[in-house]
Length: 350
Image (cartoon, rainbow, N blue to C red; front, side, top):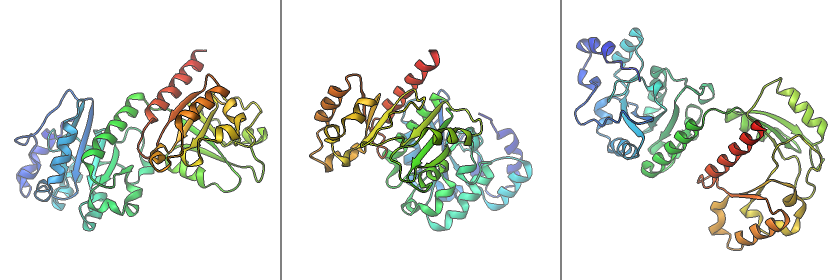
C-alpha cells in the first residue's frame, strides 16, 4: 500500500494540533502479512473519535481474525482538509498512513445525525465515489454502522453495506464474506427476469450492480422462446460468466422447452411447505439443483420436514443437488457458490 507519510510530514508544521495526523502512533497494531485490509473511520477529528470506545473494540475484533488487518482513520479539521486537497493528498489511515481508497473495505461509523455531512466529506477526501452505484470493483466496499444505522434509508445511497445492531459479531463475519468474494475474483453476471407485469425485480437487480433485462409474460404461465431471444438482443452483445434466466416456469407448468441453459435450478422457500414435492413432482424431476431458501424461518415452521423433502425429491431425481440457504444469515450461500463455480468450470472445460 502507498505510504503517504513523506508527503504529509512537511505539512504538519503549519497544521493545528499536528499530533492528530502522526502515523505509527504508539500502541498501534501492524499486520503486514494480512491479505485483507480494513480501515475503520470516525467521521470527525481525532480527539472525538479516539475517545469512542466502540471504534477501538471493532478494530480489535477485526485484528483478532487471522489474515485480516484493521486500521483507523479520522476526518481532519476543515483547514487541514483544504490543505490536503490543495496538495493532492487523499484521506489516510493512522497506522500506516495509507490512502483509504487502497483498502479492501472501509467502515464509517454513524455516531449522530450531525455527522451525516461529514460522511460525505470523508468519502470525497478519500477519493471514493460518493454514491454506491458509481463505484467500481477497484474501489473499497463502504460499510456503515453505529447508532444512526437504525434508520439506514437516508444513508443508503452512499453505502454498499449497512449493519444494523451491534457490530462486534457482525463486522468480522461481513468482512470475511467480502474477503472470500474478492478472493474468488470478479465474475460478470447477467439476469433475465420474467414476471407477469412490472420491472420491480429487474430494477432491484440493477441497483445491486448486475445487468438485468425484464420480460413480461402478461398472463402466460412461462416465458416463450421468442421472449428469451429478445432479452439476449437487449444485452447488446454483453458477455457474462453467469447468465441467470429467472422464472421461466413454475410448479404448475415447468418450462419444457430447451432454453440452452447449462443448469436448471428450482427455488422452494421454507414458508411454502415441504409437501410441494408431492404436489408438483414434474418440477423436481426436471431440475439439476433444488435451493431451499429462507431456512432462517425453520424455527417458526415446525411442520417443515427437511428430511422428508430431501428423501422425496431424490426419489424423483436421484442426482438432485440440494442446498439449504438463507440470504439473511448467509447460511449455505458459500456452498451454493462453490457448486455454481464447479458447474461453470465443467462446462468451460467441455
